[in-house]
Amino acid sequence: EHGATPIDLVAEFGGAPDTRASAFWLCERMSVSPESLGWEQRQPVTISFGKSLPAPVPANDDDEDAEPVYIEDAPVAGLPVSLCYPPGAVGDFARFITDVARFPSPPLALAGALALTAALIGRRYKGPTGLRSNVYLVGLADSGHGKDITLRAPVAIAGSTPAGDRVIDKFFIDDLASVQGLATRLRKDPAGVLQIDEFGKWLGAITSRKAPPHKETLALAVLQLTGAASGTWGGAERAAGNMARVHNPCVSIHGVTTPSTFWAALSGGNISEGLLGRLIVIDAGNAPPAKVRRPAASLDEIPPALIEHVEALIGGNIGGNLFGLNASGERKPAAVLTAAYGPGVEDLFESFDDRIRAEHKKTDAELRPLLTRVGENAARLALIVSVGCSPGDPVITAEIQTWANAVAEASYRTIAAGAADNVADNDRQQDYLRIRNYITKKGAEGITTRMLIKQVKGRIERRQLDDILDLLQTAGEVVYGEAVASSGQKRVRWWAADHRPEVVKQVER
Image 1 (cartoon, rainbow, N blue to C red):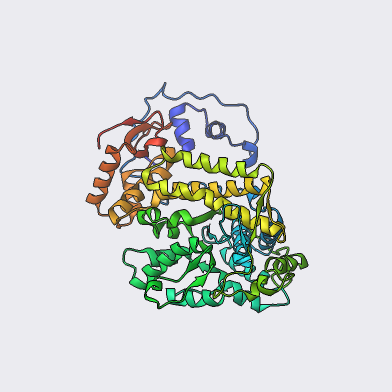
Image 2 (image 1 turned 90 degrees about the vertical axis):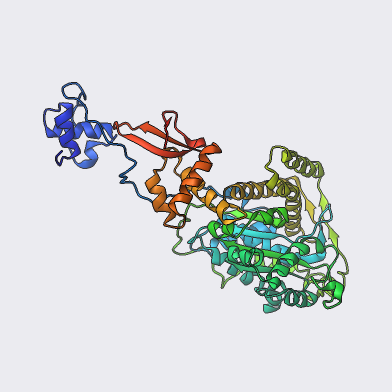
């Protein structure tokens, strides 16, 4: 009924003899050292509440909420650093990309290193299962994670040899506007990597339900090219004879994007059609990287060891038709080297593939198409690293295959979790997932209806919001309940079923 500080309340309702005793008691309850506040240390104060005076009854907190409306994302660790530096050229490239960054991200550096190596070895290598080195890599990171340097550094590394810009022009594909343009490029340069900043926006543009026909055709080409590296590809108009065939095109993609943009671009169709499973998603996590004022390396000074890697990977020491700079999509490669398994590695790979495929029964039907691609991605990753270790005689060792299995599985887990939380086939389903995620992200703290309304910022009408909350309740995904805080205040809020505290009692809305 009147203004009061916490110290006043302790003195009035707890029986503290004076304000100093009240202050020291509050320090004890809050685990704050009085010395840290510049106060003299005192003996613990004993105060008893609720004996001399009745405790006030606090109001329900659902109508007035002083908490911030901003809902933080749950911590995401990202790909472990222990997996970011595999042996050989890939690991050396990744370390350099990390060293030149002011905001270094080892996972994003790994994506850049893999894409560079995959492009340089092109169509001249295959793995024991017949798969080639073409991979679709996507680095997920929030703004401020130094994504740009992971696109620029591979270009600088590629251009560091005496061949200079010839290597860049040969192996780095410009932005694609049409299938015809892609086919023309691949006829001339059949192996390379397409770098895409804001990959999520690009993906949305070619896979959206409202995408124009030429964008839909480009999306189909991206799907076709993953399997065309061991054969031929003639584009969407091949049957009409309007587009010449390309022999053994080996196209990789290196995209970077924010998680929100990436997931917003996807739909259930991307899963069923197989596009999502073809992606190797490398998550940088959402912890901001530490700034490095003076990076240890510079793009102006590429280490000699990296230059030697580039020359070896493009076959410069061999020459002739095995030299990557001489490759043409008008003819088959003169020879294709096959990476061999080391002792026991085939069993290691097959056991991994069997374990992932065995999850079929316990995996949601919508996500099952992803399972069949995990082993393939692991095989491609192992091939790339093995060639980076020994271009003349690549061997997939147990160390390499174990690493490849771990990265491929981490990608699958990231995609599966993200798809379950974000991928929708229509706007209503998207709103359903959005509201569920708002509630889930608040964890055990819960969220009031008022906070939810503020969070949606008018994107969803109140009646529609109520309908979605009813559906979430009926599905058992959320709970509307009441809990009593330590202060005695009643908290009536929404909780995700998985984060519902034991003390929460379900109530009617």
